[in-house]
Image 1: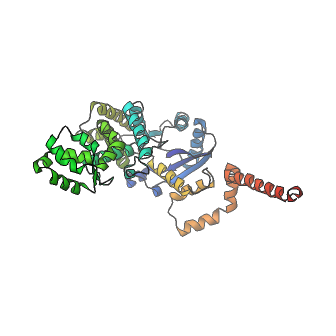
Image 2 (image 1 turned 90 degrees about the horizontal axis):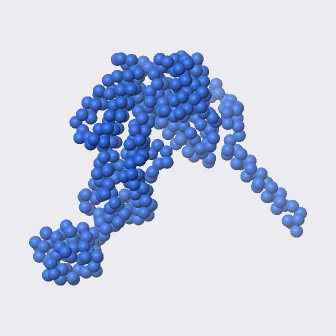
Length: 422
């Protein structure tokens, strides 16, 4: 049994409970697809507490039997509801903390008060503003999320690694291929060149060259070849307009190179444990398997401490699973279904939970002509409308239309009154 609660705009919350027979887990490889699970319950809640979640679980168990495992994030109401269910009804039910949310929580604890990481994010945000609508737009940092920020921190770290790699290639022609020899460039290399060489290069001053090849060729015409070979890297770096613009907007990343390497290492070991338990499930051996997987990684002392927390999580969750038994470790399937629902309902004028939640079971079903025929014969439009009215009452969109239509009618009556017609 997999539980999750998604919160939409507006007052309503939607609780979805998925289920899969334990016997089928090994057949799926523990990486569930939409059609591997069945929607056991959909509840629209305007107020959610642990007691409400507990009662929903009790009612559901009367219909389908007691679950072997309940898997979810540790939202306060969800956690309390499951704990009440285990305490009062079935203490033998295994309650597993979803690995994705647990890893995000560990990352949050590690980085939330890390001044360097928070400074890195601030620079990313500022850079995003500065490079929009410029020639550096193709290097735009990812947009920071207001929710699930640590679930998706790898987006920013991957971006930073790629931009640093781009910088190392020392080819900024995609920003600008132009090379410019001016007073600013001369001042940057004046200490590296003798007076004779500077005098020979004076003919190039205040001129722009289309690309590096033309610029280098012109250098060869003004100074001796050995001087070109000796000083060309410094001169070309100083004269590259693309490099100058990169440094002005993205040069700050160089100062975070070591930090980014550390953050990337955190993400790497998180990916190791997630891949392991998401593909192979969770059991008493998961802890040892993970330790073996990261044994050869050159971890820093700080990363070693982070790894220790992952080991403790695997040991705790694995200890609750019977020996020689493997169960689920992730509720990603329900997040995926919610994502599909949000995409499916994104065209609604106002973002609120409504009768569209009834499409969620469709995402877990194989659509056949027989299924469609059965649905149309067993559920009428009137049934859906009555259910919607009972659960939601008048929708926000309906209220909006009523108010605005009344305003239009009032305005028309006012325009047609005898006083206004004079």
